[in-house]
Amino acid sequence: MNLDEIADRAFAPVRDAIAESRIPGAVFGVVDGSGAKALRWAGAAQVEPVREPMARDTIFDLASLTKVVFTTRRLLDFAAEGRIDLDAPLTTAIPDLRQYDVGGAPERRLTFRQCLAHQTHLPAVEPLYTYGQDSHTLRAFVLQRAWRAGPPVYSDINFILLGIAIERLTGAPLADQPVPEGFTFRPDPARCAATERCSWRGRVMRGEVHDENAFALGGASGHAGLFGTADALLDVAADMLARAAAGDPRDAPLWRREAPTRSLGWEMAHPGWSGSDACSPRTIGHTGFTGTGLWVDPDSRRAWTLLTNRVHPSRHRESGIVALRRAVGALVGESTVKPSPD
Image (cartoon, rainbow, N blue to C red; front, side, top):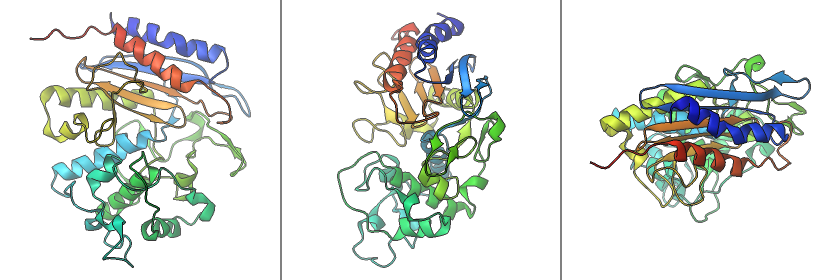
């Protein structure tokens, strides 16, 4: 089955979700190892305050895809260049982390690898924005807080710390860091899909980061703040597929399990996950709260992205995004001819 046929088939449940008003709109795309793409789009980029149509080049708030497209990629590049050791503590980049308890603070023992793989004691999330909007003070709060301990969970705090480490290593704010073509931390609002009508900020968010903590931290953080198009994500995925086929050692950590469901940064295929059970066991993927997602299958040499604005105009309704992602992933996986073993 060719890419256009796969795209038509996999986009069918997305069209249904739009027709049933479960999501306002979406862009879907699939890419193969050669870089060839097929994209489909439908619905609205915005329904409030005025309706605007979705387009192929609509820019989405990628939410937690920031973790893998930007933060993980940047740190793996630093490791390949010898600028960091993934098994070294974060204090090699952030020496003032818990600086008032240098002997006993568990945060001072956290490594880059542990944070990337979400294997720390840190909580999933904290409403940092409720403590104020001075980004410098909030960064200091994150660094000096004695975080409550718990079992390893998927944690935004891990990646907020990693974002601060990148700022320290480069001497530049995240919003000023280089990003691949098609991505930005400062999008043109007129080209963006709208997200939520936010009660805290008193407006429909469009071209401003939806995540409250990233907003309070200045608009860009290690866990959220990146914007981009479906084409840009597929280009990233095509590069990953090419490096996987070539056995590039820089990307080896992406395909190696650090925990039962995780590699570095990415989630790995497991029963019931967002990429469906039809993909290969080495498939990696990640989702974003705003309704975004990217999945990369190195064995079939296929990758796909589904970008929706499912939180527009409100997150407080059932969009069916979990089932929709799995349905799309199953159709992509079932449409892919798996390579025969040699």
